[in-house]
Length: 345
Ligand SMILES: *Cc1c(COP(=O)(O)O)cnc(C)c1O
Image (cartoon, rainbow, N blue to C red; front, side, top):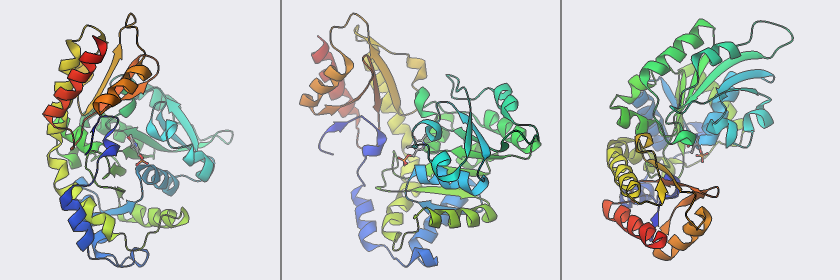
């Protein structure tokens, strides 16, 4: 890349190997189910996550929307976190397009939703109330710092869902970061979830796409919903070819991104102008803030860093988010740290 872009792992460019695979991909009409590369990606994703079937979708937002709409009818309810991506950052799609009622419970600093709050949110069978159909979790939980949530917790929510006849959906946009950080097999981590979406396009470097996985029946329903939403693509094997490399290879190197996030966090922690909670840096995200006495604002500092070819996302007047990924090397972290130290001195 032509700059040190720490704003998000969504900024990643496809690797040269991906570009070659895309150019050479075997393709067919995927609306007819005839694209061999899409089919290979869907099968590989399902196998890797321990589910029966997969569906290639245009984005993580589409994957979550398709998953919710394949489970819930109009007026049905989904229980999800009040800081969940699906609640905050997906343009209200589940309500706007599906008439699905979101019932939020608080996201705790460790990324979990309190079990008691989930339990209390499940509706009794009462004609006055919406019908609860689905619980949705997010792993890693982005808004609290990319915190991975454990298999034990996920299993517990899965038991609660089953005891009430509900399904469990996992927004696993960064599920491979979670599995890497927790050092568990990804299929084990999501074993309790009936469906999972994960993004090929973030730290995994593919240019486009996510995969939704679940049971064969569920994916058949999801397939129809994807078509309704205009998400039926034709020779999508050109995209899926990059997705296969993302899934097979890029998932194996995420510990490097986590080490670089840690390197950045530790470098920031020694700057007297910076506030940072090192114990909250567990995957590829680093949240930090300027101390109150620092005379520059976060947007001003972010602007000045661009002169050093360092791009960081400011969040409010004092805060920042930095995200490491494939295109950030240890020496880029060190250059970003020098630029920040220079601008603050
Ligand atoms: C990125 C992300 C998504 C999906 O985003 P798209 O930009 O639509 O691909 C969903 N959930 C979480 C937690 C995310 O970080």
